[in-house]
Length: 142
Image (cartoon, rainbow, N blue to C red; front, side, top):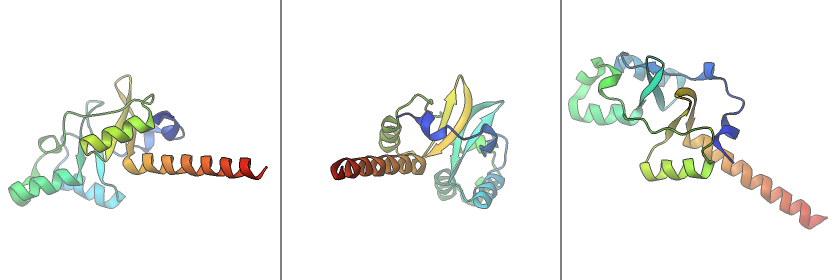
């Protein structure tokens, strides 16, 4: 199965993102208020990077609170590693594991269409395994 299956019922209007010019402190407030771990960072309609809790921690360790007044573009993770809707779920999970990422922008024709987390992928895999197990139980019983 592909990432398209996971994002099939999502709307692009549901994507929470920030602009490259946003202050780090404002983006942190957004992460906290939405209870999320990362945001796609947009620059004139395209994904320029990803801003995550890790970015904050690493920069705070290096610079202290001075980094809170910087723009996101100065501390975001870039260049972006993204996936397409046609990417297989197993390939996306493998890439997340190898690169130690927890979030991927899903991009189609250069446009952000979704933002997925490792939790989205793992939930899909668990549901798939449970469905297969139920099908096997049903087959064995009949």
